[in-house]
Image (cartoon, rainbow, N blue to C red):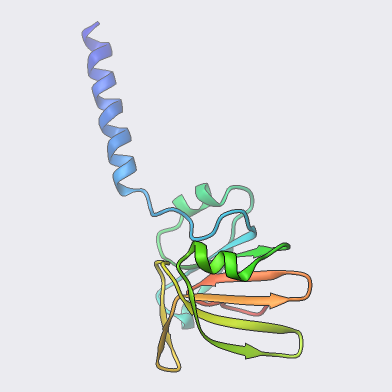
Length: 138
């Protein structure tokens, strides 16, 4: 009986410690192709795509400096409201529109003298969102 009490106390302490050191929740929910950007700067940034469960994949990474997800059905205004976002500037390309925003998200970069922490790239058939910005090609 005493051993069970000791084991329960140890297990409880271990769970509490794990919760205390677990990383923050994911930036985006409901998206596909969840990707983590890892590294110290954009020069050494590498992309790690979550194979199955993004939350579990996040636990294995120590140097995350950004995240992204893709959506087939996307409502920009509803999304901005959800993350308390505001469009700072836009960039129109031949196949997409890019929105550079501020939002209640953890990562940020300085871009054209603006602090940006949400990048939304809207294409005809899909949308990619990232914090702070989309790294690599899209």
